[in-house]
Length: 201
Image 1 (cartoon, one colour):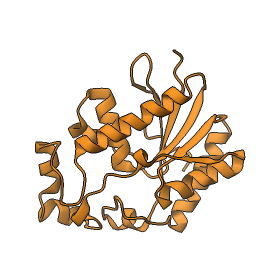
Image 2: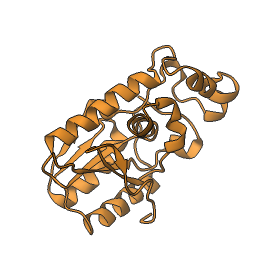
Image 3: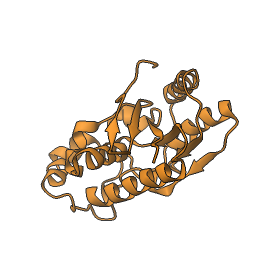
Image 4: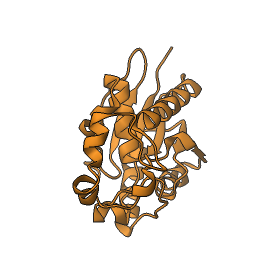
């Protein structure tokens, strides 16, 4: 089986990114900086790559990032709910500082990949759906060379840690910047080419 290259793109900046707050299921628009990032990313990629398809999380920040790319190619954006961000339930919209200092959130994740904030998800749950989505996309486009996948920082990091190390708790080793591009192939084994590329920004 041939293996398409999946271009994993994190969405452009939202206000919560600039403020250091966690937005998982919270549906946030791009900032003006985020819109510029999306434009630069699309221009950079399309000067080098012809995409067979463009997939996106259904959340607005990803969809708007993907639509910039799609508009320039004349393609539709294909939504995949499994590409959505790691939602942390009652802790949504909390600053990273408070998550760490008052809720011990990151230590809990390191200790237990099944730890689930009330109303949220666990690392393992996110890993299962993200890996499922990437394999599903791969299988749909096995004969294609290039597929764009627009998703979220934590979700992409969890997916990479799981695919490369079978350990979602290593997700903090794979953090990616807004509108960065990471190239992933899945066959014959998961392999990352360019990682967290931001030179176009």
